[in-house]
Image 1 (cartoon, rainbow, N blue to C red):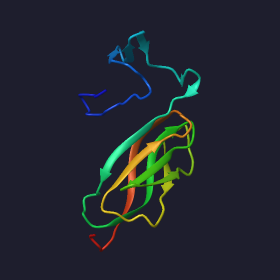
Image 2 (cartoon, rainbow, N blue to C red; image 1 turned 90 degrees about the horizontal axis):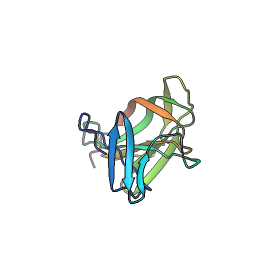
Image 3 (tube, rainbow, N blue to C red; image 1 turned 45 degrees about the horizontal axis):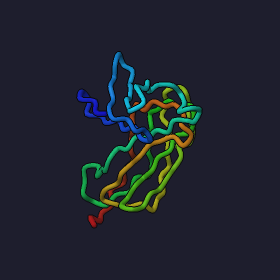
Length: 146
């Protein structure tokens, strides 16, 4: 689903819906068996997995760089994870803590990752509830371009 006001994209997976609608702030999906309200804390008793893919970032420079830390302004009911994607390689790191109150949560990123472009995904392994307010990166530009 595309939010035409913000440009944000939501993708539901694992469903065979042929259409979606949001009515009075509630999402619905329709398939050959009927119309389904998409709300609740579980998917038939299983935690609902979620992730946010931030897209490729160059942080305003074509130079090689290292990202040493991320600070996630978030509330959550469990640990938040950060995946760093460079080409075909993926590296996963956990936030140091979590809180149901809005706080900055630090994620320490491995020192050996150096690239021009990096992609990032934030997610919960256990389907914990979370709200993400901000993401701040500690970027160290390197003198080498390629």
